[in-house]
Length: 244
Image 1 (cartoon, rainbow, N blue to C red):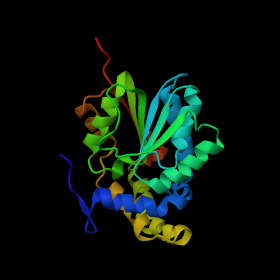
Image 2: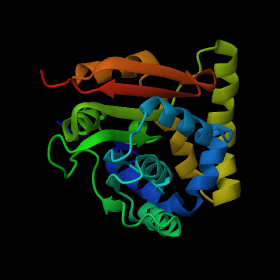
Image 3: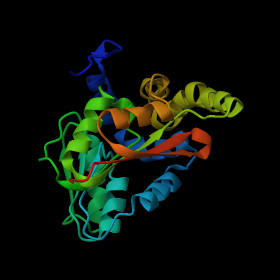
Image 4: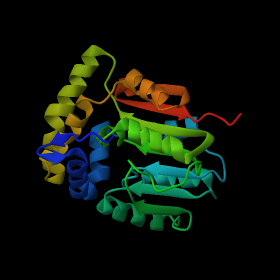
């Protein structure tokens, strides 16, 4: 059952939707600030670990402005790639990128809900979610849905902000994340409240090992965990059991 978490008087899903509808035009810029410009390197590392093959089909959940969706399409070359997001403003920017790359025949961007994916079981070879799992109403439901729509032997992949492991570095990073970042949001995007929410979204999010345990709880096997840049981010890869 969906957990009705309230944030500033709204259900979490409604609040997060309003955040991303409002910051869509500055989303790529702010990703650089959030990650110290490391998010592209993290995604490249993730793609190497995924080993996408030509013709593979992939679903990019909460695809945002479609950067990872495009990377998946280029790796697959010929396979169908779907990007799904609940923010129409984010998808509008993503659609422009897809067209500029000449990938609109391979990539389909759709408006949808990560909590209830509109696809049959065993459809894709990979299901990814980048920097969005901490924003969903229920982590287990979203991961279960991603697991449902991939084929046996397929991969569920989460690339997400995390909590640094080294105590001193954690203090420095959290000071930046909680105290500096919201003001950068105000300065660069004229949005303080929305960027104050992003650090808050990490506060109660599971750490790397806790998230790995959730992957296993919903039925994945051979779960891989890779801390990135001192634990600022973490990559989790779970595998769907093969048919015996």
